[in-house]
Amino acid sequence: MLHNASVDFEAIKPRVDEEAVLRALQLEGASPRDIADALAESKVRKVSAKMPGAVVLGCDQVLDFKGEILTKPKTVDDARSQLQKLRSERHMLLSAAVIYKDGEPLWRFIGTARLFMRSFSDEFLDAYLERNWDEIQHCVGAYMLEAEGVRLFEKVDGDYFTVLGMPLVEILSYLTLQGELPK
Image (cartoon, rainbow, N blue to C red; front, side, top):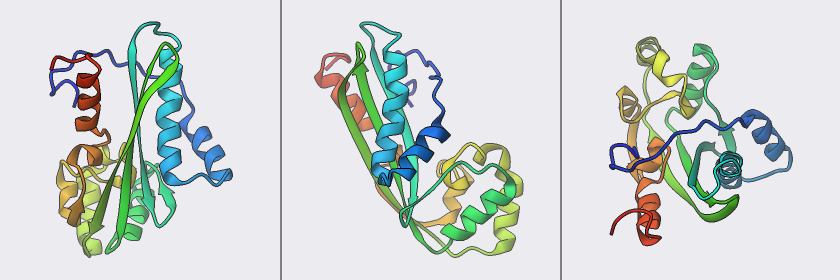
């Protein structure tokens, strides 16, 4: 998304055990919103500490289904179970972005999108999983709205980029206001 917006950047994968962070936060009773923020911050803090003077962005997305967090499916059966749970229901995607510089937080934002899944048949679901497993296994909720996953929905309320996992408009606005991007 940053590339498509003509933003120069270097992608660095942080070494963060996201599952351990998630489990610890859930044990503490953290809200889905706080979990999304903490996951994004754990990534950006780690990278920023190794990049003096650099503006560093960390993002993460959480799927909140009635207070339960759904993660990336580990198997096709896990994906089927998640989608059956979400069928005919509403859920929220929370996309957190945190910006650090010199190991210190400068800015944070959490975008929220509300999605309403339609009532689809088990036959459609099985065919969808067969066609899309390679792509959706990397996605919370086992769907990609920008691909065939859009057919699972009857309504989406919220910013498209938030659904994709990064509140891009807000990030670009902040970077422009701070002089990191041209006005």
